[in-house]
Length: 458
Image (cartoon, rainbow, N blue to C red; front, top):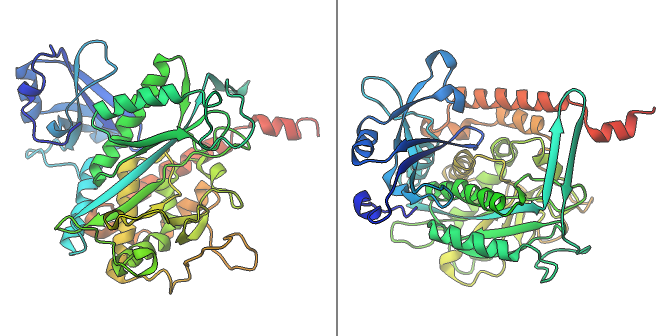
């Protein structure tokens, strides 16, 4: 996945490609694919006419008008590392079935491009740069089931460390070889890895952090990275999960984003030496917008009921709507260790990997742009900077929503910042709120094992 203009014939020369695989994510961020036998004729047909599919199954369209078209994005060409037959894989672009085959407004990859284009349109910057952190658990086995007669989950882990697992060394870091192998596959697939290590959770929590890339490429890398990690775990007979809170009383898994902007000359558009954390006015306003809309953003960045088992005040989880240097309980953390002006940035810590990255990153950027355009100063809004304990009861503090329904209510009240240039629409937001409310109702109506433990014999 090189994001270069490729001569596909030269790219596949000597590989004996047998199939073409087209990959698309649905609204929830789950990956789907469609496979065709490879030939020059097939590839040409795909580029001109595309291939039809049922958009209702992806959550894009209603059943009564669901025909859509997908075409490969040649810049995302990749030899799939997990298919037995040599397979050329692409992410896609989605089109309508009107006479002009117009681009679908809510093609999630188009949404990402359109959002980034606003930077230049408003004279703010040229490119956005994002550095995601993959946090996940690896178990030796995981079993789970729910139906009317039984509901359970069971996990097994070979890890023996009983303390804080952060950067724990061998022999307690059981899966370091797995991370090595994953890193090599990620790098070969065009995803640059910064480092990997064991995370805090002592029953198999891992982290792999990626280098910076623009918005669309970052979102693609997240989807492809999850695909690689899940497939590699399966090959090793392991179970891997990105659930925000899979283990009771263990550290939750987030997907933090380090973030900054580049100007048209490639310089850091957030940097100003001598200001607080070397962040200029643009950066401060951008942070102000993100924090102003943080509660509504949770509907996209933390879109599962499990997300709010991680976002609990009083632990390292980022629940306080404020900013500060080095404070991991704040929504916005500014790393103290940055020495290179080109990498001056902030870290947005609430998101987790149940988010659809195309939607979540677009929403975060639209919130930041709203802050710059409206000059929302986080210092004047009472968002900090805070360097002390953000859970000190003597400090008046706002916190992120404590449930998915609260986040959806926040989005319902605060979404005008998402409507800029019709990147989101009122109908899209209404649809999102509806499907997520239905999801919440389905889960909340289901008796859980802990309820049996607490209430069965009352």
